[in-house]
Amino acid sequence: MKLVVFGYGAVGRDTTKLLAERGDDVLVAQRTEPKELPATVRFVACDLTDPAAVAAACAGRDVAICTAGFPYDSKVWEASWPAAMRALLDGCRLAGARFVFADNLYMYGPQTDPLVETMPLTTYGRKPRVRAEITRMWQAAAAAGDVRAVALRASDFYGPDVANSVLAGYGVANLVAGKPAIVPYDPDHPHDVTYVPDFARALVTLTDAQDDAYGQAYHVPNAPTRTLRELLALAAQLADVPLRLQLLPPWLQPVLGLFQPMVGELVEMRFQTDRPYHVDATKFAARFGGGATSFEDGLAETIRFYRN
Image 1 (cartoon, rainbow, N blue to C red):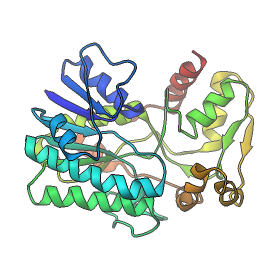
Image 2 (cartoon, one colour; image 1 turned 60 degrees about the horizontal axis):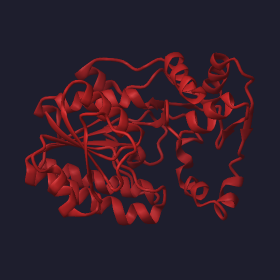
Image 3 (cartoon, rainbow, N blue to C red; image 1 turned 90 degrees about the horizontal axis):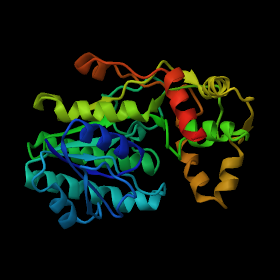
């Protein structure tokens, strides 16, 4: 199979590795060339908001997988994500390629029930509203028969080499370095998290799926829900280090946001962390089977990465 993977962050790396290991012809497309790629994988420079560059990257490919991200800035998202989605859909249409979108869960907005794929798209906030907008774009293209498109939605990431993860980058990495884990929200609400290698495996599953699996969205299966405090305690136990937490109180986020834009961008996303956050992945499991990596195994791999 010939595939192009747009974006080479944590999810893109793991997805590319799986595809290359099984012998697929893989092209990685993003602005800058990665320092390292699997031996059989080629690279092409590509601005995801440039329709001509995206179309060129899609040409001759059977499947286009988007694992890309933009800086965590509402203004950037509002300008870049719709342009990128238009370019991706047009590129896939011209190439006759199927489109697999590695997505998040923002488009549901504030909810109190477990998240399911049939929930209405939100009009809340800026970043959630952008994710809802681009969801409507690929859904419309799929419904019109222009592109065979599918989305796979994941919760907050953790795993080896996942720098912007609360559990991994700010939690496990700090604990194994003898520092307190940085906790930017209430650590005692149950909260689903996604192990990045599980996300990559599920993306590969969708590249192989029959066409009738397309035109819809799925949730990545996660290990049984725990709180962030429980997961950090387990990580400390596995790493044989003391559990030390540095909590950032909710009232401080807007203040810090005046000086650190990244923190300010989290304020509108409080609905993900100020209540239990459960993701129902029954649909994916019923269609494709399989489970999720246990936290014991996933955290052990994460600890091993940060220690090495």
